[in-house]
Length: 74
Image (spheres, rainbow, N blue to C red):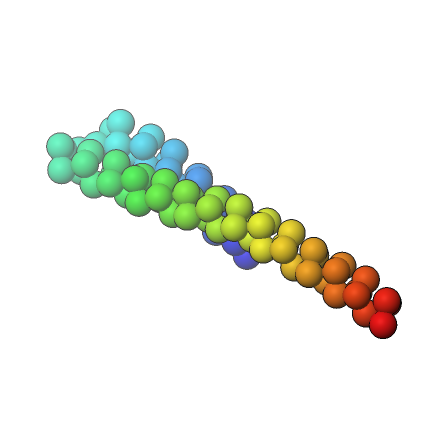
């Protein structure tokens, strides 16, 4: 699910920048770029979350391995 949301936010950034190039007014231009900025921040959030999840996965694997090893000794 996260991958799909991340992909949508990535494509929205470029789409809104592209639309800003043909803006009807300065306010329209600012609006389109502001949407792109929001989408870029959302993409950054998903990337940070993925990085955090990798660390969590590593920790969980380590805990499981050490628990199994300790259990085998007993």
